Image 1: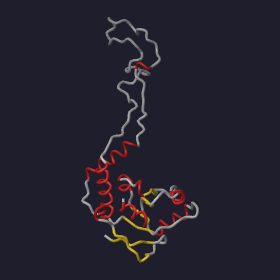
Image 2 (image 1 turned 60 degrees about the horizontal axis):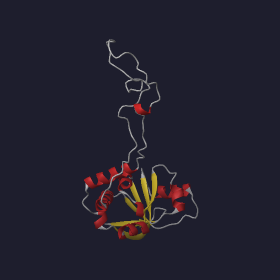
Image 3 (image 1 turned 120 degrees about the horizontal axis):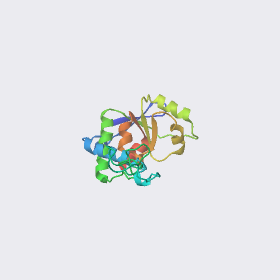
Image 4 (image 1 turned 60 degrees about the vertical axis):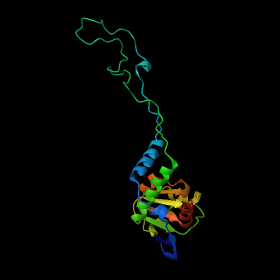
Length: 205
C-alpha cells in the first residue's frame, strides 16, 4: 500500500511511502487488542484507594446495651459498619492492577490496530520538518492544512521538544515518538499522522 508524502502545507511532495504488509496489512486479532488495551488502562491505575475498617475507627468500645431482653439485635461496638460513622465493610484496599503480557502478543495487537487504521485510510505521512520554537498556532495551522478532523495522533521519529510543546495544548491532539506508539492511542485517534522518518523507523523496528 502506497501513501503520498505531504508537506506541512498539505501539498503533495511527489514522493510516496510503501506501508509494509507485515505491519499495516495483517489480519487483525481483536482479542490481542483487547488484552493490550486492558493492560494499558490497568497500568494507569494508581490503586491507592483505601477505606477504614472497624479496627481503624476511633470510637468508644463500650457495650451499647445489654445483650438480651431488648427485642433487637445484639451489638457490642459503635465501630460496626452498620452504624453511621462506623468502619467500611469489605472496603477497598491499596493494590497493584498491573499484569504481564508477552511481547509477541503486544506486537500482534499494535500491528492489528495499525492495520485497522490503514484499512480505514486514516493514516497520513508528512515530510520531516523542524520548529525553531514552540508555536501552538503554527502547529495548529499544519493540522488545518492537512484537513485533520477529530482526534489525531502525531507520531515523530524521536522526542522533539518544540513539536511536543507546540501541540500538547491543542484539544484532541496527542504527540508521541514512534518508539512509544501503543495500541490504545492508535485506536483512540481518528487520524494517524506520521513524519516520513517516523514511518520508516516504525517499519524498521
